[in-house]
Length: 299
Ligand SMILES: NC(=O)c1ccc[n+]([C@@H]2O[C@H](COP(=O)([O-])OP(=O)(O)OC[C@H]3O[C@@H](n4cnc5c(N)ncnc54)[C@H](OP(=O)(O)O)[C@@H]3O)[C@@H](O)[C@H]2O)c1
Image: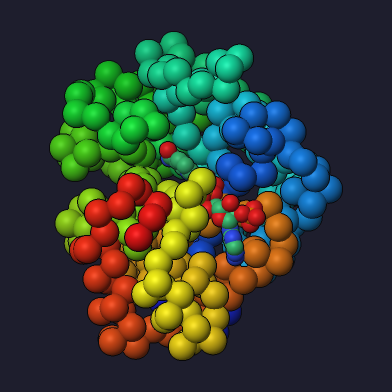
C-alpha cells in the first residue's frame, strides 16, 4: 500500500483510488480568527495553497464550515482547474452560527445541503472524499451515526461523492459506518501527546484504511515538551518537524495534514517527511504520550 520514492520522502498512500504523498495540507488555518471570515492576508493564503501543490502536496483538507466557505473558495481561486492528482477532502456534519459556534447539522436534508454547498464552492461535479464529522469540540461521543452515514452513502451512489470517511468518532462508530459503506479514512485528533487512538490506528492499518490525525501539531495549543525540544535540537531541526516525523513513523496509514498560513512553515512541514528518527529517539518521543497528564496539546 505504501511506496517510498525520491519525490515523496514520506512515501505515499492510496486514499480511495488515488496515491497521495503522506504529507498533505489542512486549510482550516487559512480562514480568519476563530475559523470565521476572510484570512488576515488573502494573497499569502492563495500563495500557500499554490506552493503546497508546487511542493508535491496532493491531499488538501477543508470544509465548507471553515469561514464558512472561506477555505473552499480560496482553494478554488488558487487551484481551479484542479490538477488531476489533487484530492480535496471535505467534511460535513456541522454548520456555523453567527457567534462562530459549530452547531450539529446531521439530518439528511442538512447533509445533502452541505454536500451541494461544497460542490458549489469548490467548483466540482463530485467531491473526492467527504467525512461525516461526529461528536463536538470536546471530542467523539457514543451514539449511532447510521442515519447520517446512510445519507452520505446514498449521495455517493448518486455520484456526488467519490469516497467516504468519518471524523471525530469512536471505534464503534467506525465499525458502524463500515457496515453501511466503504470507509477510506478516519480523521480524529491525534498527536504526540494525545494518543487515545493508538489501537484504532493499528487496526485501520491492518484493514488498509487511512488515519488522518487532526491537530497534528497540537492545533490551537501548540505542542510543548522538553523531550520534543531535546530530540529536535539533537537532530538539528524544529519541534514541529519532529512532531510530524513521529506521526509519519507511527504507521504507514497515517497521513498528516498540518495547517499553516505561512509558506515558510509549509516548506518546513513538507521537509519533515524526510526526517529519519532513530529507534532511541522514537522511544523517547513515545514516552511523552504515555506519561502526559496535561490537557490535550500539552506534553
Ligand atoms: N475533523 C475535525 O474535527 C478537525 C478539527 C480541527 C482541524 N481539522 C483539520 O486538521 C488540520 C490541521 O489542524 P490545525 O491546522 O488546526 O492544527 P495543527 O496543524 O496542529 O497546527 C496548526 C498551527 O501550527 C502552526 N504551525 C504550522 N506549521 C508550523 C511550523 N512549521 N512552525 C511553527 N508553527 C507551525 C500554525 O501557525 P502558522 O499559521 O503561523 O504556521 C498553526 O497555528 C486543519 O487544517 C483541518 O483541516 C479537522
